[in-house]
Amino acid sequence: MVYAIQSILSGVCAPTPTPSPNENLTQIITTVSSIVAVCNDNLPPASAQQGNEILRELSEHANKLSEVQAMPEVTKESRQIMAKSSFAVANAMKGLMKL
Image 1 (cartoon, rainbow, N blue to C red):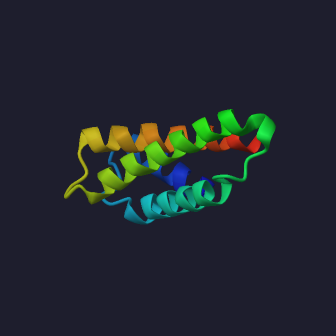
Image 2: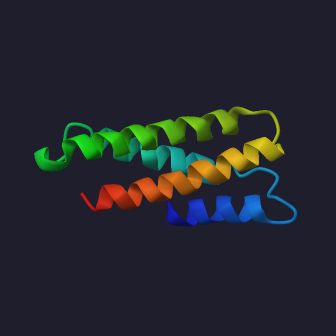
Image 3: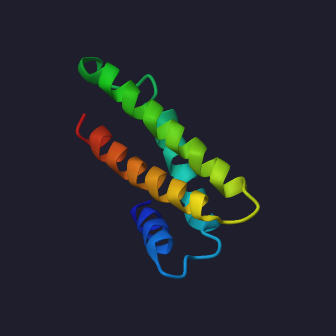
């Protein structure tokens, strides 16, 4: 998943953006969905509230990436959403790992 996020970010920031980052988006969305499903109701009681917030954030950004993926073409706005949500997923995963 780290490679997929890095690919999305480097493709978005490149002078000539990657035309279709679908494979990387699919990998991120699938991985996040699996992590949320496994972690839901399995968080340590002491950090359940914080963990649930992180899981909600992960789901929210995975949904945004799904919406962008469904768009007929890659636009400047969709590239910005991809970058923001991919970066947010990486940060949320870091936070989840600390629980």
